[in-house]
Length: 287
Ligand code: PLP
Image (tube, rainbow, N blue to C red):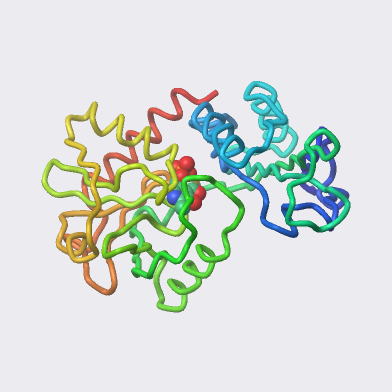
């Protein structure tokens, strides 16, 4: 069954879904995106994604073409039409098709944004095999631009980082800037020392993860101490545990960094527990 894709108000079979070659998303990576996970056919952590989307658009001077309620209705319709039980919804909004290529932003009155959304089926999202073995990561220089707090579609370097990890026989890369870890290619990064969970503070050098916000809230409720500060690769290698969070992986244990085992070299109890709590609480709150 071909997927049904949403393009500018229409639900189309994926083979008929089209965006112009002049679209600024294609020519300039002039667009923002969100990934929202789905469990039991319901949206996970949706309000946070809607708020961050509005912020990303505002930071780039783009009008928000679709309200949070309307967008949730689109997401639910895609989940229904594509019969998604577990998976993800990808949303992209670009500055549209001005009809020519130019560095100057088009007038939003005459060039509406392009809005595209589609689903990806991931039947074992909650029960991901990778969560049982954990990620092995390498560290690489953070060569991204200085506003990675805006969730733009400029993902070439993170994609290269993922490939560097693959070539090294690993699962992901953690970025290092000025001697400390910023985040993973597509996730926030954490270490655990005793009862403390340490992760970089929010700024312009990390994405403000929606999963991060929820996991830190649940961790506080579970009596963990949260320390928002930078950490080095050496500190991470010597920590009790490490993990990453994102909508696509929830909480993912990290068991090795640059060939050095973290803790026991197996998924640690804190990461495993936080993953359980996150999935349980989010399933309960799903909408
Ligand atoms: N950091 C980066 C660079 C990301 O690309 C992502 C998700 O795509 C995250 C962190 C995690 O964000 P979220 O928890 O909202 O998925």
